Amino acid sequence: MGTDGGRVYDVAVVGGGAAGLAGALTLARARRAVVVLDAGSPRNAPAEHLHGYLGRDGAAPAELLAAGRAEAAAYGAEVRSDAAGTVLAADRAAEGGFVLRCADGSAVRAGRLLLATGLVDELPDVPGLRERWGRDVLHCPYCHGWEVRDQPIAVLGGGPLALHQAQMWRNWSGRVTLLAHTWRPGAEERELLAALGVRVVEGEVIGLTVGAGGLSGVTLAGGAGVDCRALVVAPRFTARAGVARSLGLPVTGVERDGVQLGTCLEADPATGATALRGVWAAGNVTSPMDQLAAAAAAGVRAAVAINADLIEETTRRALDAHRARQAHGAQ
Image (cartoon, rainbow, N blue to C red; front, top):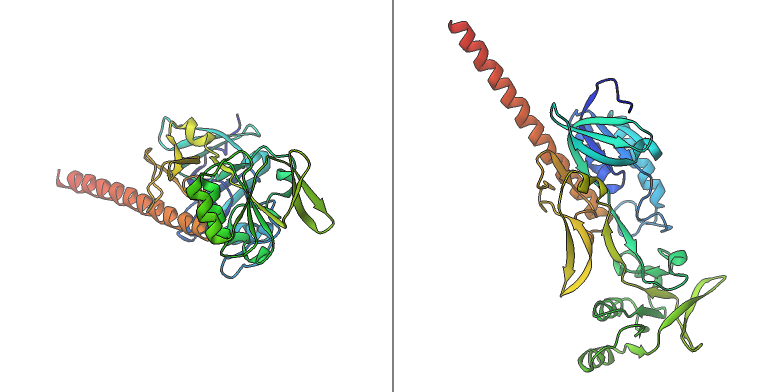
């Protein structure tokens, strides 16, 4: 296994999305030796534009990441991608710090780790969803609601979360339909939907209808169709936690109102500190509901905490060395 000739970085950032790059930029500006290891599979790759990100609204996701890499590199951060940036596992180093094993056979050593590996959206098992994901198959109204405002919007039922989604999306359009699909809303839920003017359509969704202008509807079992220009689904948010698990860090379930939404890596919400000393986490891997701006902010907060830890270590070593010199001089 190749190494970097004995080089030990102050911090290795695993993941080159908004959280990881914001953390790397902050640490590089703090004069730390930083390497970003990026496998190159950002969660928002299917989306054509960013929305609601101050100063970057309407930009392409790849454009933001390219700018972030360039900014971090301008302050000395190293960015590795593809196989060289794909971390397979991490271990504690015998001499302290960590060793990360990458897909190209190389090894990277660092004193601290920032895990910003993100998550995977696992979509309901309906043909055609994955191909339209991030375009007109959606889940977040704050990301995409404005773009489909006042259009016919269908919410795919699968459980009680669909009721919450229908309530939210009703804010952007008065033409919301709840497709019961595999869920059977109760009397109270149907009353609430009726009060909001949300129509309920029974029947399992078996496919999407897509034309030159994008999504135009869905097909139900039996052949009936329902018109819509956007289909709202509830993905399962699964943390990319392979590196965290290799270090023995706990991954927990994410729950909302008794509904399991997915998994995440446990970390302190204020600093990103994990249960393992020397390892921090930020972004969607630890907080699946965060939008891009919140993920970037979490990366900055974690970076500040990491730098504070490094300063404390430097101070402690300086004090120990000072006391040793004082003791030697007194002899």
